[in-house]
Image (cartoon, rainbow over all chains, first blue to last red):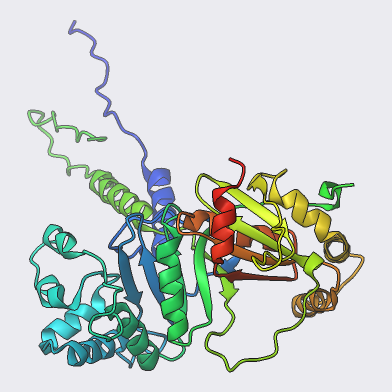
Length: 214
Length: 210
């Protein structure tokens, strides 16, 4: 009598439910994805109770990091036919006598925030890798030279001209010195911007009638 | 692999049977890919949108207007400096009219400046909070815009609450300024402004209690 062999079973797991679940998750994430743009610097915003949402489009952001370096960002606006960023850079080029090629201008259109003096701008646009780009980010100068307003002033001015609907937001790190923020606010006011947004994180605080001191 | 395809062992048997084909599809590569994609999307998605706080600054270089007369008892000056402390005083500090008011030390905690602000703003705070509570409990049904307008009117009509002047020196942190503006929103202060610090106030800060 031959030895009785147990029938060989294939170890099989039914993966269909798993695949189903994964598909659902994937589709959900795909549809809700709004990509985090690559920021030039890391910012830890202070907390507030404000529940107003930052607008997605038509916003120019002045970013001030912990060390007081200033970065700038403007989006292309709601109207996709307009190339706000390209227009702004063209104007800046004229102001500071820097000639940009069409390719450089178009490249700039896709980038997010940046922060360097105009002298380094061409170098930044043509930098090979992100490390090189990061090294060039030394902050936008805010001091006026030869009775000329500062570079940040012109960035704000030309952005306002290119997209008059753009709201202004200041995104500062909580640890930044207020002096630097004040400088930016003053500069905005010189540009006739009296209303601006401070970017904050939501932190709920409940105060009721019971908290009233007797 | 989750599935090992069984080798046909019955080759030697005489009868030729049509090979039984497995109808299962090996899904492992698909699952792998999906895992990868999901991880990628999870990491790159920005879930929480940043919030913003709107502030309006008084216009600069405006042709000189007659400044509205504010009774001194309504002005509350808040001075911000480093180390998370703040000082406040009521009234005006005028070097020509001594004595100078004394600075009182406070902080950003619940029992710090908030208590003082709430006490000074008692009437307006009660009015607005009662209004909000009534809306929340469903006793009062109005649209959001109407409610906002009514709260605005309440703030405008307020004649007793403090007028807070926020002054930060060079050592202050941005966080502190945001904190104090936030405190205004929490306490429903009708009028506040961020203004430049005066030299006399800097002097006062030097001799302030530590």
